[in-house]
Length: 336
Image (cartoon, rainbow, N blue to C red; front, side):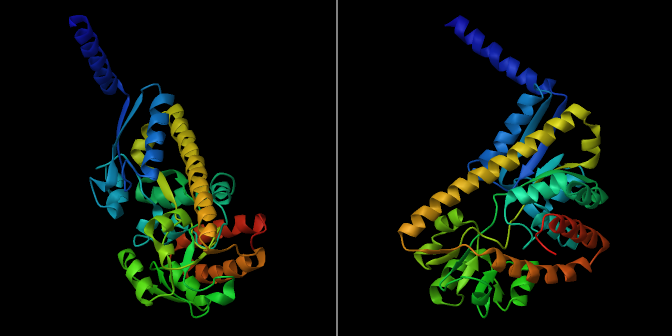
């Protein structure tokens, strides 16, 4: 028994000494809880970094925005309260409208893989970091679960069905895009969606992915949805304080970049599977799912581009990011 206790004590001491022996002890924050799907994916990112660095990097993650509010995570890292954060650029649109186009370039891309291609091969990484580094932050990469689905009490077969459609919308660019196409977006708190659908105040809602909408119980009230989606692809990011990032040797930077790429791919695949499973069950329940044609998506994208124009005029940084997206969209045939 004494031998066992001694061995256990020695092992614990080794774990503790290894943590203190790390070359980089980093503090990060995310809005996700540790037990959520996204939280578990973030933990896998941490595990990958620590394993690939051979223990040279140790990350203390603060889950569920436990240090500062989610919208304050970026500034907390920029000022050195945190070393890095995993929230999303869209939370910073009040700081500069350009962050809309790193947080959710609405109407731009059909899949996460197209958005990842823009980041890694279309000049997105350079254009985005010109924005981030002006705020003393470095953007390592993006991760997204893909397009969200619109839920509705009425059919959403194509752009014509958007005319007069009353739906819950987040504020900002989305309201402008849908209003441009004849819809009636109503900005309301997320917690009001269920009651507003139930009472007929709204015809539908932009809430989340198809699988998450099932979890919210939306299809107990309505039986129409877009799937796969086309309008909104919220993006989370991995960032570091610029001084912290610059303190990393090249091999540690590479480890973070590779771990972020793995996180991006794993997130997209995980949500793909969850949405496909949800779609199968919803069809069996009689819910109508609408996959818009290439022509209908092009019509929506054209409306989005007109709304992008207004945002591009807000700041030079917004203009630069809009032009970076458009250059890539033209190269890949998405727009003319």
